[in-house]
Length: 326
Image (tube, rainbow, N blue to C red; front, side, top):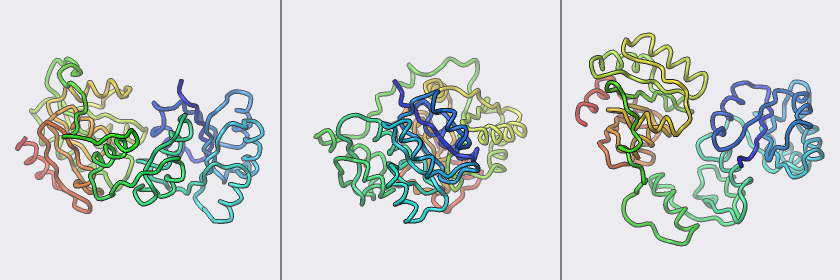
């Protein structure tokens, strides 16, 4: 049974962002005001509430007291864009499990790790403060393990898991995925363009995607997956300018995995689906703009080319040359 998370925030973009990160792992409900939160008191029993401290019709600290009275077993993580030490102390006094400043990184870390750790049963293992990308996340764990931040992210995760379970990892990573078995049957060859990523600094410019799509004419249909509404709009804009491009239907992750497995190639920015393509062994070109490929680049048994890097926006020609080399 999935844990239930209630997101209470008057900003639609924050609710959308948190929903896109958490749905699938959790059942997510939303409230955009103090009044909407109070209405939920008789409708659900959440495991965790993510509470904006500044709501248009209520003080989040006052609501925190009401939440703990109504749902004593529920943990509350307070969100704010104007964090102060005094506010954090006061929130803690009133029963908050954690105090989180906005904007926050949704890739690791505290938002996801805090909730997973809180709902999980048993002893909680995780990185120690020097190893975690967000030091505060270490406070959520009962057992903290040191793992060098200079290692590749996959190596870090393998080491952390091994230390938690008491073994030593051996050999290269084996994802246990069979591309042939998973690939969906297609009437004609297609490629996938993964333009969407949660962090703006990782995005490749939209005009580059359009130019790339036009340059790929004759190499099959181009599919544009999306998750959030903003990503759908961007997919629509690219598809409108590229004759053979099509916006994919939004589907659950297992069906997206089948879609990726059946692709002739994948071109994408540093995002989770890119790493899934690598794990499946699909030929891929990874476009890096705002992150370090040496630490988070895709690893897999299939053909992989990486272009760009942190602060280095690759050209369309560089991406095409990389694809031709695969």
